[in-house]
Amino acid sequence: MTPTRSSQVLVAEDLARRGQLPAAVAACYEALAVNDRDAFVHALLGHLMLEGDFYDEAIAASTQAIELDPDCSPAYLALGLAYDRRGGMWDQSVLVWHELAEVVPDLVTAHVQLGEAFAAAAFEEEAVDSWKRALELDPKEARAHYNLAIAALKREGMSTALPTIRRAGELDPSQDELFFSLLGLPAERLEFDVAKVKPEAEARLFAAGMLLRAEDFFGASDLVRLVLDENPADAGALALAAYAYLKQEAANEAMACALRALTYSAELPTALYTLGVVYSRFPGLAKHAARVFIALAKAAPQHSLTHVLLAESLLGLQRYGQAKQAYRAAVRLDPACVRARFGLAAVRLTEGGYAEAQWEMRRAAYYDTRRQGNFWRLYDAYAEGGDV
Amino acid sequence: MTSEEASHLYEAFVAQDPAKAIQVVERVRSSGVPQSQLFDTLYVPAMSLLGGAWAEGLIDEIVFTQASVVAEQIGSFVMPPVARPDTGVTVVIGTIHRDRHSVMKDVVASALKEAGFRVNDLGVDVRAADFLERLEETGSRIVIVFAEILATARAVSGVRDLLTAENREDVVLLVAGGPFAADPGLARAVGANGVIASAESALKVLGRVRDDILAGGAS
View 1 (cartoon, chains in turn cyan, blue):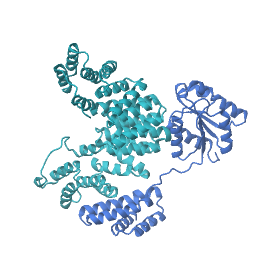
View 2 (cartoon, helix red, strand yellow):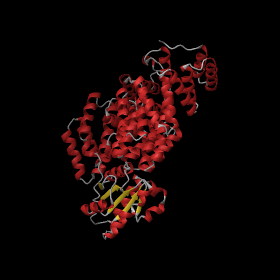
View 3 (spheres, rainbow over the protein chains, first blue to last red):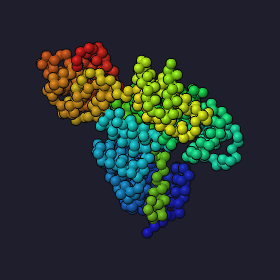
View 4 (cartoon, chains in turn red, orange):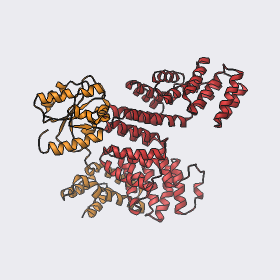
């Protein structure tokens, strides 16, 4: 049977969806005054308390929702996250995530969080199994990759962990976005007609960048070729070509184009980025990658990921102290950068700083789960009474 | 000379002739360019020429791709060596008796191995006598003892006592772990020669030990 929502709940829900948290909380309490046995209201209140970082209140409200309806999946999510963010409640956390993973088996976050709860409770093997399960559901799930890298670091050291960290980074869409940001593309995706692109290098390269972002490699290559036919020394065009080759796993072509671009413009960020990424794929070129990423971090210091890339190359050279500085610079620029947080955790582990490493990973989870917005997905599915 | 050879290497790429490309590499190597510099002095300029030729339309897409395949084939001939040279120095490591903490030990062991040290890892819960026995077996003169609990950290003095009793005062005893990081006096109290604070500090300290104490001799 589909659960029904009262009009008071709908008001609270609307306010919550619009981000008006205090008003939404007030509306929840009004709804509770009418009916204090409504699982929807308690689940919503749990979520709102979690959003406000009131963890004990979130735990109380979510627990109440589950007591009223043991199938209330959004309440399990809020409860698990509240346990994890509060800290020190790993045994309860394991139970909640385990339950949610059973109720909503395709919810990747549940498996990632279950793994982190297992790891915090020192069940390392179970943790690894959970992260692997998460990757079976979503091979691009970054936090599962990073957690596996940290687990590898604990067992076998940095040389084993680093390839996993890099692989996770390359799967992370934010790394591609760094390239497009270096290229100067706007954040939003624009629709345009390729046939109407002005016959000027700047317009063609802009359009080629937009096509590359849409993974239209052939369309982008055609435009780049037009620019190069007019000026073979156009560094920007060569850098775009390098990136297009890189995305098609043609590392040597990418290297050739990026190197050529840098002969014309030695500090061109897009060429430095592509060359650095190519170099970092070869273990023997760790020093070269670090040199290139140092230049990139200097050329584009406002981007947190340039510092992350530099830090990862320094890890490959066993310069953990310098890597820590670079990661810190990244976190200062973007506290929600999951990749930088896990990198810092890895460096902290090389210093024996277990608590600090754990803290960084918890911050990564905090920002990552806030960004995901899974609550509303589960809530809406629960409201419809169907599967997620 | 080298820029000329880079042109030859580029020509070999375009001609899809790996044998000729290898000949160029070998010629440059035999002229005295070390392996660690072949990539920068030969391969990078050749690849840049290749990119330039494609940009100028001197070679088409298919030739560019085929030339890149040849470039990839000879990549291993010009790559700087991955593994750091064997230092010849053996280090015995382990976590002290009644302590089962292994993370820091494993991280440090991996960093040292990567840096070319010969690491002999005894694991966790290791008795003082086992450290001594392994030092004798391997001929090593460096031991790193890990302890993460105050009580077990204090027990590291037992390792120093045993070394003294067996006239092995030549052994460098290094300690690592939270209690030693928190109380710098503790390391001296247990008779340690130094403290390893992190994987990077392990590399620095071991580098100094290798250079200053063990220079020229077997470890």
